[in-house]
Image (cartoon, rainbow, N blue to C red):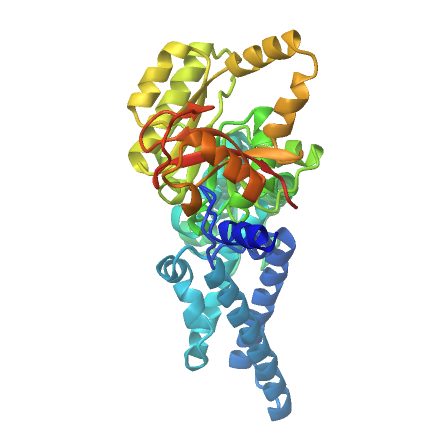
Length: 488
């Protein structure tokens, strides 16, 4: 009995599950979620504004020595907070090089000898606009302006037209009625600047002297109030939309992801995929990035799925730029779902899947890619392109339905094996040394007796899977498919 327990301990000690994601010090999904949260971003924004205000006070305001020292002490404490925050961001970055590329100004700003550069902290406010789901590349690619103007061109066109008309109207009117009467208006250029500043400030430094000047100023003031109201309403709507979007979507920062899972396309299966990846211990450190214009974390929340390790990139997954932005070169697995669209046929859906799959394999030949398609004749194209697994839409579910219709009670078997939420699951393992060289039928008993695993298949190197094998001699480079009891 002792010998049996010892053998079982030794075998379990060096058993290795296939496809297990390596632990990385820079994963830390909980910390990544904290630093990317809206509350943390808003808190950091307030601290930055306070620190910049204190720097201005320290530089331009004459204070008693005691108060000046207090301001400097508070600023030093804030600097320490920023050092801690930058250190945490370094921990979750994919590499030290990418960290310094993104935060070199911030690093300079916290060096004690570089006090003058602390004003540069205000530039961090641009990066913090990702709190409103505007993306972390704002400061380099100006995606903030692109996203705002893309949907609000009409509103901004109307506001700009009103403002330009008001300034020109005021400049012409004041040059005609106030030139020589009002101090400061000598030339038409003076009238233009007076009109512009009156429009912006909503007041006139010197009250107009002529009746015409008073009428022009009255019209200018009415336009100023209208433009101000429209600007206020438009920006309020933008901030409301972005805050609402931030509450529903966790913005992705793919540059910080490493050894992650890509799910391209969004459908009802996305929640199932996310659940299985989240509960599988082989992917316990892997984050999930959903790439789709339809991606919505609200759907996952509604299904009570924890989304701390899930982020989204709301862009077209068939574009090479999007896949590069998603960090496909650093991902370990990609799943491409058949994504429906308005007036999109099954051929169109498959064409998008094939384009995305082949692009992924081209960008990262080592990635494990699985694709879902409707038409079986396209499977060969995907296989030739390096896609490892192709699932035909409805084929598996149809065959499963046929089996369970023929044999009552069989459905429980499949439900148990296909998810870790049940008692058992299917897993690939490396063959333990004890069974190398054995015939498969002999190894079945050893694995079951020593480990409690039931061997159901063997996948020789670069060969198809052998189901229920007999007479196969197990080699070191074989992969053993077993039914593995789930142990929490």
